[in-house]
Length: 199
Image 1 (cartoon, rainbow, N blue to C red):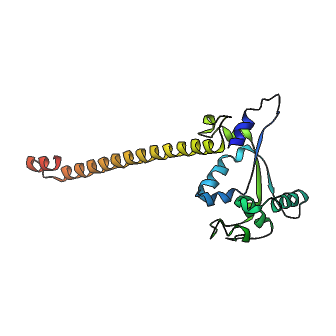
Image 2 (cartoon, rainbow, N blue to C red):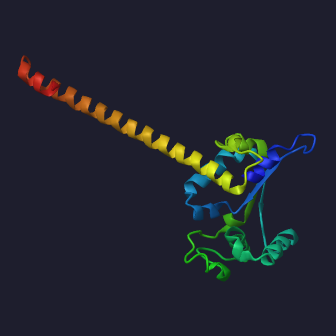
Image 3 (cartoon, rainbow, N blue to C red):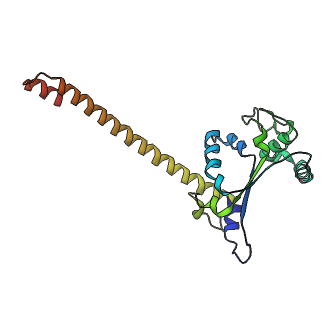
């Protein structure tokens, strides 16, 4: 996200068009993101898609990427290691040997989706980002992380409050329904019965 913010500040005189390219989107499951949320986000962005490219190990450019990752201490990158494993044909909850010092059991199912690269128009993606405008060029990665997660925490608290309010409102409505039902079932002219249910 800090990289995206840096790109955002480049003027149109410097860069004529800006794009975002992603690959291995389902690996975010490892960060606690639900697959259904990933699918929903990709569906929302579908109209902004520039291209889709299924990476294959035999492709010259993809093979170059694979070689670069292999020579750059891949144990330091879980994401790139899992993408490379998927490119080699690994599927399911496979865990590369060099990651076993960091991860005991993988929760990311490697699939064709792990190898799918998608390109988007930059502005279309960033327009829907709730914390993007709060990131400044002076921020280091730690500050970017804190800004993003403090925003998410606030949103979570707001959602919990809203949910609680909805629950109380539903409870009151439910109570009113029971009250109306009880009063309507009371014998005509029985004031004591009406008073009892009203209380």
